[in-house]
Amino acid sequence: MVTAGTVLMAHNVIYLHTTLHGKLRIWRRELDRADLKGNEQLLDLGCGRGAVLIEAARRLPTGHAVGVDLWSGKDQSGNRPEVTLANAAAAGVADRVEVHTADMTALPFADGSFDVVTSALAIHNIPSPEARYRAVDEAMRVLRPGGQLLIADFWPMARKYAAHIGQGTLRGLGPGYWYGGPWLSVTLLHAVKEP
Image 1 (cartoon, helix red, strand yellow):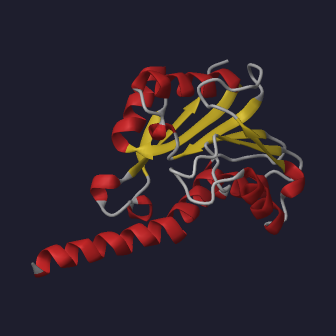
Image 2: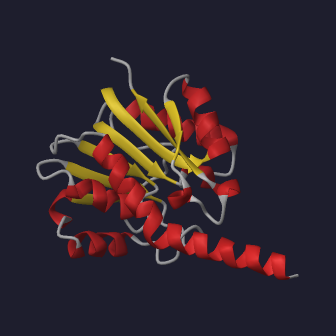
Image 3: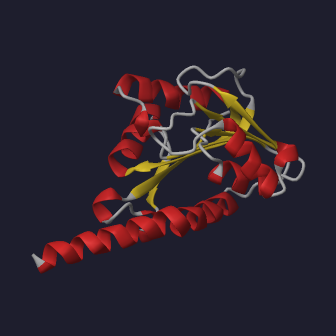
């Protein structure tokens, strides 16, 4: 019984660390690795309250960060566009952030509209595999040639997205992005759209 309690406590501590600190630190690192120039147009799929969207906007002094979400409270509490915009204002990046209510399986943007598309643990919330693949296809459609796709999701999902688009590299994001333990680890799919 002591062992089960210890495992449960460790699971909760790791989960809290990831939620409060780990995922943000890792997204800062990944956005730095993307080598943004500062003038890019970036789209964040399933932006929620804006953690990745705002980190990206901080790196885009002459660019623009656009977030889309269906604003479901089931997936994230307090998930509303006005909360995301208030968070952007508090971070000092409101002038380069906008949000839209949109389904990531049918994005309301023209082909090649964005230099970078990000998504953090959002696509797996789509109920069917076909619709998840449609979201990945939409992400690739709105990317300009040479644009970067950065999707963080649980390992099995990220692997399937890479297989679906037939390209990209997969990299585990480490203990800082574990949701309780290595069995719920997050992997990054990084792909560059071919010209």
